[in-house]
Image 1 (cartoon, helix red, strand yellow):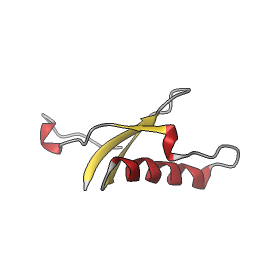
Image 2 (cartoon, helix red, strand yellow):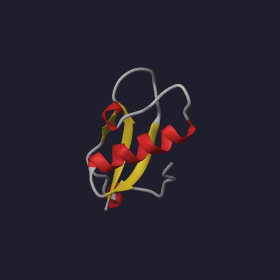
Image 3 (cartoon, helix red, strand yellow):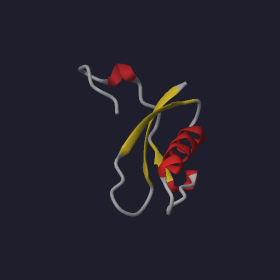
Image 4 (tube, helix red, strand yellow):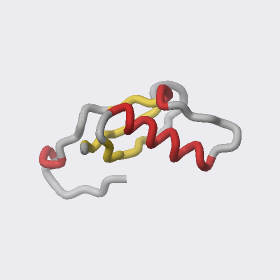
Length: 67
């Protein structure tokens, strides 16, 4: 498993989600599926998102909250 930062690929500021997934495609699908549970007017697709390279937790210099 890898840690990814998932953001919206275009449009208004969306924020970010930190996801643990096997690959980039699964990370995008997890975010889209999670957001679609709460949406009534917008339907997200995995192609609506961008994914960072895998994040190595050892690259952080200090402790941090992942949200």
